[in-house]
Structure formats: C-alpha cells, structure tokens
Length: 259
Image 1: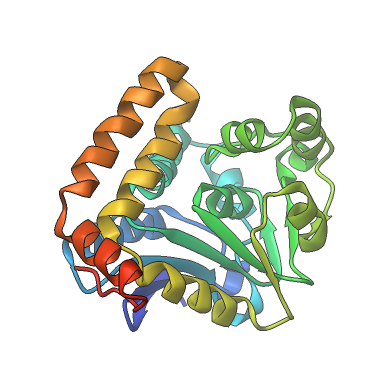
Image 2: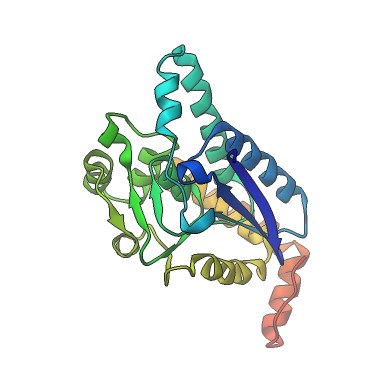
C-alpha cells in the first residue's frame, strides 16, 4: 500500500492521518504535497476551524524512510534537497496556517515525525508515546525545523542533548519540559485532541489567527515593535463582529457564537 495522507472531518475539525503501513507511517513527498493541499482547502472553508495531524494504527510517524534515503545517496544531492524543500514547505505552511493545528501522537514520533509534531501549535500525546530525534543515530543532522523548534522551546543545553544524543524521550518528560500540552491514556490521544479542538473551535477564528501570528512574530521583534503589533491586532479584532458578540455574551453571562 503506497504512503498517503488521509483526510476526514469531525465537526469543525479536519483530521489528517499519516498512513504508510510498510514503513511505520514514514513521511514522503506525496504526504508533503497532500498536507499542503489539505491545509489550503481547510483555510478556505469557514466550516473548518482547526486541524489535527495524527498517525494510523497507533503509530504517529517513524520519520523518513531509511531505504529512500539510501537510494537518494546514489542520486545527485539536488534530489534530497528538493525532497527536504517539500517537507519544509509543509512545515512552514503549518506554522503560518491561521487556524490551530494539533498533533495527536500515539506510539513513536521519530526524526521528521518529531519535527512535524513540533511544528504544530499544540501536542497531545499518549502517556506511552515515545519521541526521538533519531538523526544523530544514523550520522545525520536534523530537518523539518527540529533544531529551530527545540531552541525556541527549550534551553540551548536541553536542545543540544535531545538533538545530539538521540535518546528516546517519553511523553511525560516532554510534558514536564513544556513541549507536550496534554497527556492521554494509550489509545486516547486523538479523542483528547478532538476535545481540545472543540474548545478552540468555540472561540473567535479571527482572534486565534491573530494570536498565532503574534506568537510567530514575537521572537523576531523588539518589544516596541511587538507592542505595536499587539495594538494593531487588538484594534482590528475589537472592531470585528465577533468582539461585539463576545463582549455582550460575557456581560449577559451566556455562551457566544462566533462567525
């Protein structure tokens, strides 16, 4: 069975499922392209307010196929470079996508699979999930934004340990480090992610889009620049119909309904 990215929906949430049974849901260029296309479709749909990325059959993602990497060693270096560009385009699309993206992780998330989870806005993981930056174990350096995500999320020393040592890390340790948002019992990561998505779906989409943009911009801005960005987003959102509905609903002690 060829690798594929399956798309389904649950209420206002799109679920993207990595499926590559012969290689433990390893990523490939077909998945990258499908992921970018699916997010484009979801962005244009007012019916979709959040996205969950998960893996089939109790496995999140084993990273990249080592067989494919070995084959690419016999090709011109541009072949592998173009493949990584496809992955990186998907990672950037997730990062800049204006709606919340949640990783629901069961089993292993290795190499680029770990990178993919880190690219999401939040991670829900089963307690028995295992994360590993496996690159150094096979004499490689990271891709998929792994080094960027870890350096921005952890101390330099902890990022170095995770990337250089290639140790297996349990979900509970990553939860303690602040990389995993919520833990679930084995087999329950997707349900827990859907519960989180439903909470987000009830909030104003324009406000969540602004929050994600501000989070993305914060590391690159001075305090003065960022204060200006916050001002502009606040004013824009205050004059959006959702703010009027939200403020009035709060005053009336009822649940608002946002566009």
